Length: 228
Ligand SMILES: [Cu+2]
Image 1 (cartoon, rainbow, N blue to C red):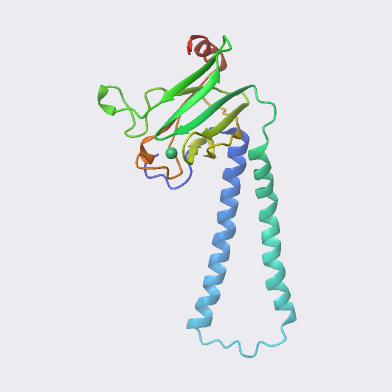
Image 2 (image 1 turned 30 degrees about the vertical axis):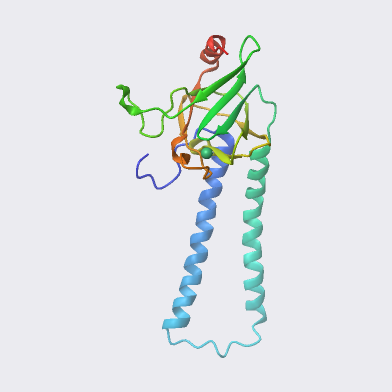
């Protein structure tokens, strides 16, 4: 992923696809507009063309009013759809809480014995011999099931943090005193990395987020062995 110029490969199935294609369409429109405006700027400034004779150009005025309106309308449809998709929880089969602290994350969920488990997740040092990403790995990773509609509840106990998993197209502010919910449905097993994305203090860069997505059967086993 180093040197990547586009988004990471995404795990988040339908919303990820929708957001990614929206991004590409958006870029297409933006590049088109920049090229067009650049072309006119160049012509007006550097070419010996005079527009002084342009008077009472009603058609032209209609065009430069209506065309941008149409472009905005075309962009509005997928962006509003995405906005709804990102907030549509559906029927979540499992929920977990991600709570921001200065400067680590805790994950709260209910295990098989209906006990509330709190998992503290601190940044790990990379000197213990195992392969780890520098500043990106934690001592206790959060675990979540694949192909199951999840609900992530994000909150904070001190200052604003932001729970973000870029490859899941997920970024939610962790606001003290408020619980934000967001849907998450992942279609691949794997380890997903993220970082706190809201400047929250001196160790803001040192509170990474790691979620391991594993198949449901293994996840249920994991849920059995988690302890308070
Ligand atoms: Cu933070």
